[in-house]
Image: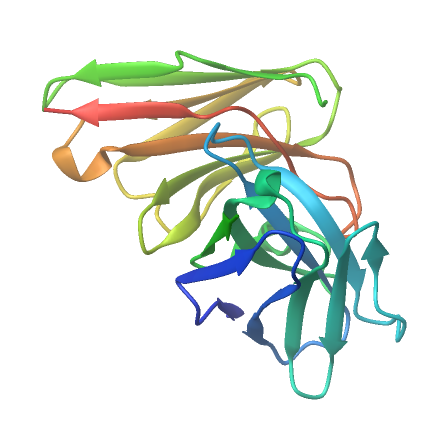
Length: 119
Length: 113
């Protein structure tokens, strides 16, 4: 079974600075998809960014980018020019692309990293 | 935002009582999921559905059952609630394809006293 590990329970960053949240995963599959979700205090789960394992290019969405290292099974999220609104829990998630049926359709989540943004 | 409605938003119930949480979608997506969120555990899959009347268990399914009689509705039932089922419950939907992200409802906070 695939596992997702977020080793940083909490992180802090100053406004306008850059922060990187780490995520590693364990899989024997070669075809899969990775996601970062943000959960602000409102409890809503918001998709931040996604990455296809077959793509070498790192995904970017405005101030959010990933560093995808397939061989190392690492998928870190970089937030540039941090804003107060970035304060939230961030979850990394894995989804199999090999067997697209049954349980393979689920997302497996890490335990999350709580990001604080200070002035 | 994806059209997903969870009800109720909050619920307090007593140990041993049955509880049903409802998830309603207006997106006509095939896949629906129930997750629970607990501190230190992230989100864990309880049950999911890949079509009307087609459901399967997730990693923490003990004590829960689900039903999906219509595309738009996915019900989660706790047959006899226990304090260990105090949690925040999220419903999610997804289109077909592994690159399709999950879209989440706003969650139900359930407290079992």
